[in-house]
Length: 275
Image (tube, one colour):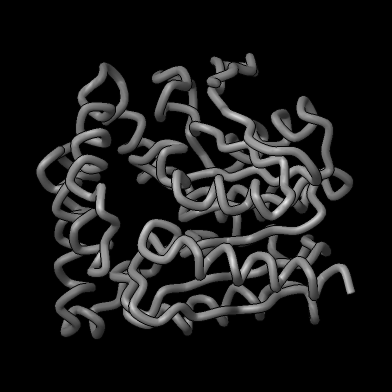
């Protein structure tokens, strides 16, 4: 059942499943909490109270907000964790990976661990040398069409590049759901503003002291070398805090392609963190 939390600027939509320790799942741009549709039941069955939230501008949350930075999203996540009675394990994908970093740095008592899935945490630096890689070149071209023109066609093309086979059985239907959402007033504009927002998370990496798991896909088109990006994030964290896991064959949406594998990595990470 969808619930709403009023925060400064609008209302956040979220849904809670299961009981036990709190885990909050935050999706990436141009998506909704539906992106975690496969992980939620597995995590709930594993004994977690799972709260999947729609970011500001996305899903059922208010479409138009004053700002859409990672710091803004972090504030929303902190408010939700506080509302639900934290602390929480905070899982963030893409832009929300950066937001999770900021939330952990700013509210350490509320965030017990962080999982960053294909995170845009550090400032994006486009690589001319990586343009020789087909998936990187095609992904960058599609993203440019979205960032500059708000092209629905290019966003769909990006999702297809960023989610190589294997894809879930409901893949075609999920694309239709995303497209329908982004045709709602204000949604595409929110996506563009999130995409073009300042990279304000990297500076907080050194201030995170809870355990952090970074998961990168080997076929992620957003980086010429996804492993190097993951290693750079871990290196910027305090010593011993971060851990990187590479998921072979995964693109930018490992939780959609390989949900059970991601759940397995998360559970193993949390068990090790508690030991």
